Amino acid sequence: MASKNDPFQFQEFDEAGDLLEANRDAVTISIEDEDLKSKSPRSAVGFAQDVGDEEPLISDDREELLSGQKKNAPFWTFEYYQRFFDIETHHVKERILGSLVPWPGKNFIQVHLRKNPDLYGPFWICTTLVFAIAISGNLSTFLQHFGNPKYKYTPEFGKVSIAATAIFSYAWLVPLGLWGLLLWRNNKILNLVSYSFMEIVCVYGYSLSVYIPAVVLWIPPVEWLRWLSIAVALCLSTSVLVMTFWPALRDDHSKVVLATVLGIVLLNGLLAVGCKTYFFSEPKLERVDFSPPAKAVNGTSS
Image (cartoon, rainbow, N blue to C red; front, top):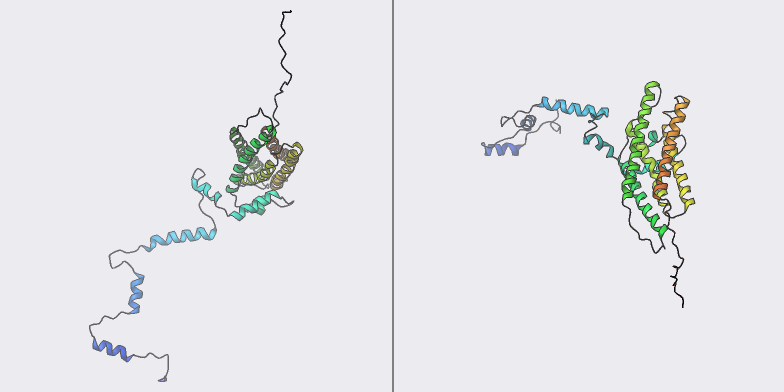
């Protein structure tokens, strides 16, 4: 038998009963009724919610999020390229530092990209390099003619378009050719490591970042400083490229490996030496004859 002082026993409150007795027309609300109404909203206005239409959408989104895979948009749409520009700033800094200081045995794609290539960093690196080459080339020409009273400085804006054509062609066409070569060799030898086209473009874009400080050192008309900066930048940039693509080449035939590595090195060197020769070549000064003009001789004699 339960005790009368049991606190868990249901008790009726006298005040509530007195209030109901005083006002019998009062409306009472039950919590259970509210719960039932909340489960079926909009039923009072004649609108029935179709739960079956929402459950497949929710389940599809949940499955895509759990699997980590989304449907890829076609490559001709803006959404396809939008994901390559969705990257944090600190990731771009890490990739730039990784391209400036390559470590032996560390693959740039595996360490820094991690199956998440971007186009944001390569695009701005190429754009910065284009303007750095054009501006530095104009400044170098001005310094070489400085002190010549017959020289009148005129900015050469055409260097911007020429530099842009050279840099962006290298950053896109060379990766395209290398991607096609690796794809062809991967079909021949199934055990080769394969890289996507965007990963190769990303590596080539970040490998150009070392040329930006090198181009600034080309402004003073000092040839030994220019060639020294070219050599250092070329070694760092080529090291990143060779160490990155070496896992995809080492299991191939020796002739193919040698030809591919030489192609990577020669094309990179051709870009560096070509930019230095075209934009920072020493101008040919015109020879000025300072001999006094010959006096006219009068043929008449007194």
